[in-house]
Length: 113
Image 1 (cartoon, one colour):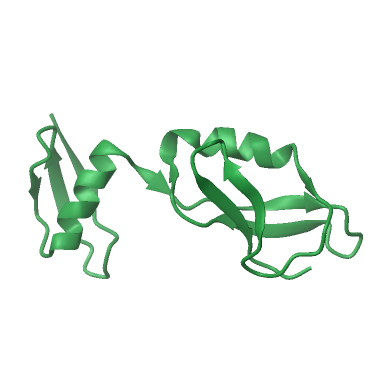
Image 2 (tube, helix red, strand yellow; image 1 turned 120 degrees about the vertical axis):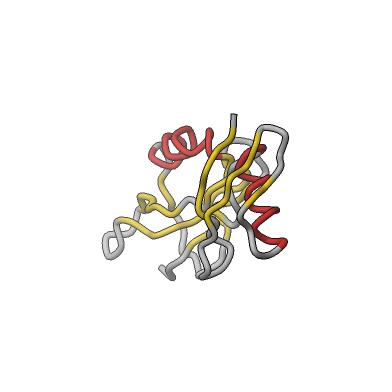
């Protein structure tokens, strides 16, 4: 069994075919090979969303994961975020949730409040 995907590591957008043995075809650079293997073995995504705040002026703040979160934890992370409320002022880049879903990735602010 193999999986077909489009590489997003550069603007070229190579059409990759990755086998279960982690043989990558269709890549024009080493980054494409690494991307294909990563997608087959441990796919991650940057999570961008908003979070409730106590501020009347800014009832929600935009946040994102500092690194990729395992794809299978995205919905669990959203549940965790939706149950939290930020009650302090933050600057862009400040950690607002440490170690989301115990996966080792922090959520950071993308807006000053």
